[in-house]
Structure formats: C-alpha cells, structure tokens
Length: 157
Image (cartoon, rainbow, N blue to C red; front, side, top):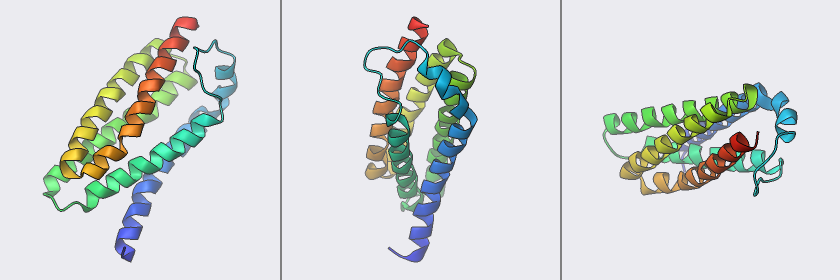
C-alpha cells in the first residue's frame, strides 16, 4: 500500500472516530442517568458500547475508503458518499436525542430511519465495492439490536 492510500484510509477512519468522539463528549454526562433507567432483557454491560462502536466506526471508515478508491465514475462514488454522510448524521443525532434529551419514542423512530439509511448505504456501497458493503453489515446488525433496546427502554420508562 502506497503512502497516498495509507493517508486516505487513515483519514476515512479518523472521520468516523471523530464523529464517535464528538457524540461521546456531547452525551457522556447522560450515561449515569441512563444507568438508572429500567433496561430490557439482553441489555449489554456499559463497557461494551464504546468497544463495539469503536470497532464499527473503524469498519465504516474502511468501507468508505474502499468506495473512495474504487475504479468507478466519480458521480456514483459521490452519490454513495452523500448517502453515507446522511446516515452518519442520523447516527450522530440519535445519541443526542436519546441520551441528552431522553426523547425515547422520537429516538426509536429516528433509529428506524437510520436503519433504513444503513440498509440503502449497504446496497449503494456494494454496487461499488462488495467489501465495502459487507463491512457495513455488522453496523446494521448492531443498530438492529439498538432498535430493540431503544424500544424496550421506551416501554419500560
């Protein structure tokens, strides 16, 4: 891998990790309140969330890298990356709505929209790079689990 590609993959991963870090900074004080909420069955321990999200953000960054370096028309890559940015926007603001404002029902609906955007993003990325599409599948699965947790918290609180 040449220096230009290394730089590009590091930037793609750094963007993702930066989004996650800013989300954490915005919502970190709310985790103590979150711990006091009634949790649905299968709620994972608190330490698991930052571990999983870090892994997912790295995978998302690598997926975006594969799209960026793909040998396809720039407009196709551009459309895919716009969709990627939109789902990233929804990802970021779900945390704010859920943790900061405790809008549990609104967050649930927002999360369903995010799920649909991730699904569309997987399809879009897969048409450019199969590897990129597959790298987003764990993200979709985790958000599917988050839908269950969000709904459970809404019902129990």
